[in-house]
Length: 211
Image (cartoon, rainbow, N blue to C red; front, side, top):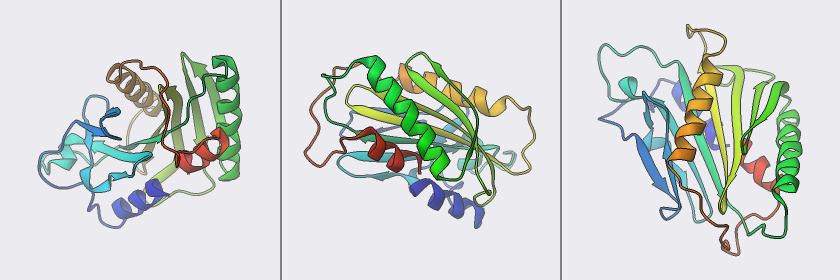
C-alpha cells in the first residue's frame, strides 16, 4: 500500500513534492535495477521504500520537486514497484506472459477497478483502469505497465492529479515514455536465483506490486 500512502501525503499538503534538487534516477536492490522516469520527472526521495527483495520509487515533476516558483502544479504522479523473483527457467515466455496478464486483471478487479483497456506491447503488459473512488487528490484513472526483467518483476503506474489540464492520451504517453526509459536504463540480464524470502508466485507478486 506504499503508493496509497504516498498519495495521501501529497493530498494532505504536498509535503512530498518539495525540497532541493531531486535526482533523475535511483538505483535499488543492491544496484540490480535503475529507476528513471521520462523527461521532466524526478525521484521523490522521501517516498522511497526498499527491503532486500522489493522496492518502491515514486516520481513527480522535477520543477515542483525543486521548489521553483514558476513550476506548474503537478499533473501526474508516477511510481515503479519492483519485486525480486525466483528463477523461472522452466517456464516459457508465453506461459509467463499469459499468467502475468491474468493476474494483473485479477488484481485490478479485486481493487474494484474497471479495466478500460489492455494490450501487450513488446514484453510489457499495458492497462488503463478506473478505480471505484479517487485517492487523495488523484483521479480514479490509472495507467499501468507490467514486465519481467531478469530476476525482477516491474510494475509502473501513472496517476493524474484532479484538475490537471491535458489531452486524453497524455497519461498513456507518459506511461509509454516511462516504460521505454526503464527498459533502456536496465540492460537485459539472465534470470538469477533470488533470496529464499523472495516471492515465488505471480499472483502473490502482483497483489503486492499493484496494490
